[in-house]
Length: 198
Ligand SMILES: [Zn+2]
Image (tube, rainbow, N blue to C red; front, side):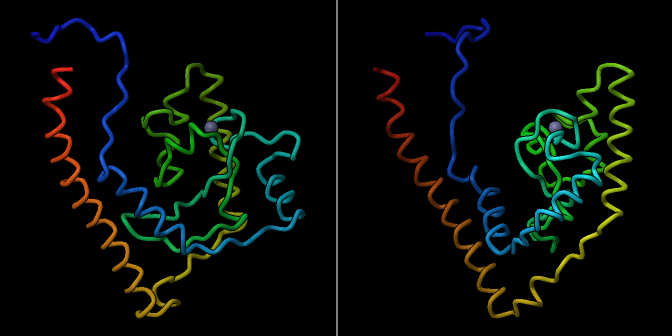
């Protein structure tokens, strides 16, 4: 049957590839080595106060929506490696899912005013929104300057034996994803003619 040019009515689920998981594997290999420094309740209250919030008024720092998670203000990943920042209150801010997804591993001050999909700037509609965003940015700048975390040199702290093996493990998993993807494609190609005639 010839393909119709009419707009598709049903949104088909996207085809999933094994290799499409590469960035989550890279994220996992970096997240897996990150220490978590648990804040005391006082430190949490102090951090919120610096952001102009209390536990009762806590919202996403970037856009003001309901917060659903805590985001690393400074990215923990740059390129394909760790930045050296860890999970600690000085580098965490309450965020909503939309902002967290949109920000990804970008620097907050560049992303927040960028046209990235779902960025706070891209959601500005009125002058009041624009003023609100400016205020959020200056509050975040003050927060970033208040208690600046020091990045750690993970590779030299771990030593080359531990570190190199971690990188080699990551590389093997990524290569296996690639190999598995090529193999999966062969099976899909074999099934396809049968699915067309169903
Ligand atoms: Zn948000």
